[in-house]
View 1 (cartoon, protein in one colour):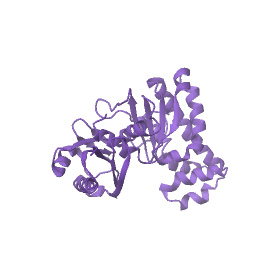
View 2 (cartoon, rainbow, N blue to C red):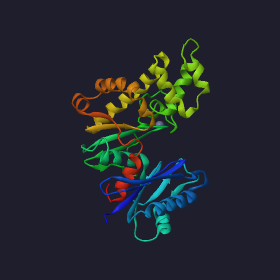
View 3 (cartoon, rainbow, N blue to C red):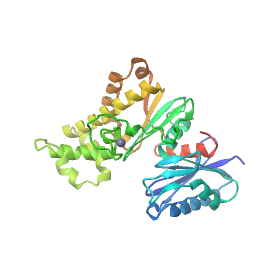
View 4 (cartoon, rainbow, N blue to C red):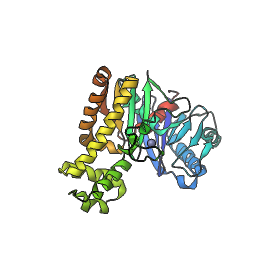
Length: 318
Ligand SMILES: [Zn+2]
């Protein structure tokens, strides 16, 4: 029997796991509540249950787990995880191994790094040996692949492209700094820019009626359809989004000269709205050779990049 592995993505709300072949094919996928508000003990119990459930299908050689936060993958420790209650320096690999028993290989990694590995292994970056994956979601995550290997940094904190400064005097970011990429190119940023647009008394926009009735999670979608219908304020929000992203991408290609930049995450659905200004800015600010040769593409795995990358780690890749 060929050696299958399990790839997992631990979110604040859901825990997703998939049984994956050594060739990267997903055989079966399950999703359960993560119970992250009940603390890491509950999350680990849920991970173990999901592993046992998926293992029934066949011989499992390893488990890879992607988690948002600061992860020390060498030590198998979660240094910090914003979505799980009360987690500081938690030895997840040790505790999960105790629960699962046997000699199963367990790998843990930051979720954005897993997404980068997944897209590089099976998605848009299949033919590239170097790429930066930027995940545009509630925040902005990043992962860097160089010479076919994940660069996770000296402390597991490499690839935090969302906290690259774009505007020194810009909007306050969740990290405490001002003007980070995340403050302009995330769902959170779109919500803020909507508020800013509405605060200008002279601005005529359909958002004035729609925004107050919109669930905050749906705001990027709503601003996207308003922009598609020609609403000038909404178009301007995506332009600002794209310009900030382009400035960030220019810095990335100037420093790393990667073959590809892959854009994923829920907000990447607004691709048509922001990619024009983003590419213009990239060309304008990037050094000519690296900016011209870099391919900027959308992620292909459609939400499965994280579990796919985690599975790659479980197979022993890095
Ligand atoms: Zn920041």
